[in-house]
Amino acid sequence: MQSTSGHTVTDRFLKELRSVTKDNEAALIVDATETGCGATGKGFWGFEGAADYLVFGKRTQVEGYYSRSSDKTSNLSLGGDHLRLLQFKVINEAITKDRLIDRVELVGASLRKSIESVASKKQGITGVRGLGTSLFIDTSSDADAAFKL
Image (cartoon, rainbow, N blue to C red; front, side, top):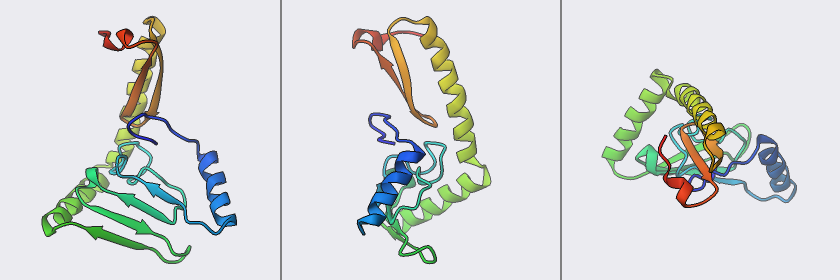
């Protein structure tokens, strides 16, 4: 998901893109800087495909990348000071223990449904896009963007 606009691609698109990169011996690099920590409800990194490199930062409180050199080996590299690494550990434990990604998916689906319900009654709202709790409301004009629910 392109998180500043809410535009998303389909799993089919990602699979086909992965096929193109493999056929051309190119690396597939996914940037999860904005979508990390499960904000999309689709996984900790926001991408569940077979990326060669996945870069992250911001929400994880630590920057780094995950690489997969083959189907059998992988590497996780973290950067930042010791405090950021400890914060990341606590964040990751909370996400796992409290099943926060599943909860984001449920809350996001409920929120989307509510927005779509309002949109069906409110002229000017033309759609909803995004994943999880990272949702965006499309309007027909700038003036329609300033509506009250």
